[in-house]
Length: 339
Image (cartoon, rainbow, N blue to C red; front, top):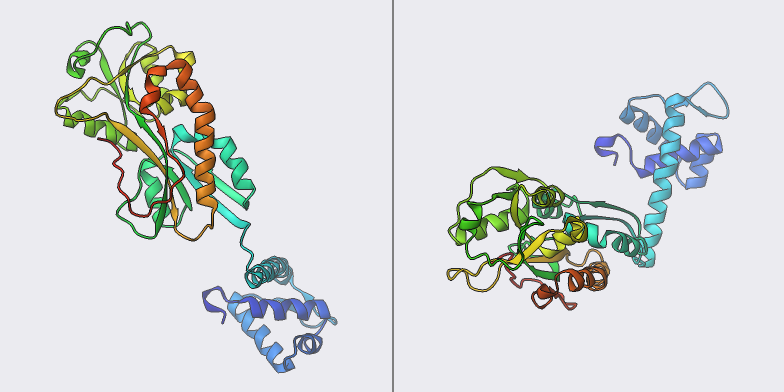
């Protein structure tokens, strides 16, 4: 049935065999169908695509310019169809055709290359995108990507598998000249000395920080709002203000080169515990075999090796607050993005 394309795989096969065998009679004999069926299929095909595909006054049959174009495409599509049929029949799905991933920027910078190496072992093709983290969940739900690693666990949706990767605290970041031994008791007091450099509200990390500021009752002027961690921390490094971010974002921007002062957020009686960011790998359940679990463990291993080693050297007081999750598969557990 040709449907809205004007052709289907069967009509393509008849077309290819007719040209390659030189006549409708030879194609019919090879395909085991009547010559009248071949003739009808080709007439329907030409009507469907809206073009003449054969030079009819020549023997053996030859294609028109449109026919030659269609022949090349038909070869490609038929070969892909044969390969797909063979793989389905064999039940071997270990190597996926394509995997599409979307990662938060900070994680892509930290584990991007090792994850690509893992992906290449399991798929013939892949795409990886970063940025626009607030759109990653929507992209997964609408099947524009297959795997996300994000602040958003999509807890309200069934049929997803979730692999916890990292839990880290938010921290206060000040310019290099700031005395690291000076205790910050109030963000409002700090804001009277320096401007607050915030993430744009489209970023999930920015949304989490704004929720925290509302919880602690701190209303800060909307003066500086930047759309990426590099810009935010560069502004702070230049002495233009202060910000709130996470250790992984500091790792992404190159904490050793920026010389920033990093302190814990001040304790607030109305907010129990510490403000945390949770990153998880989320994928549609059962579609990708064991790949999501393997990629999650690859990400954890790289974070243990590179990220934790950096934090241990540069900000050792943070080590007790960072948790790289042990391998686990969760379907509907709830882990808040920020407290």
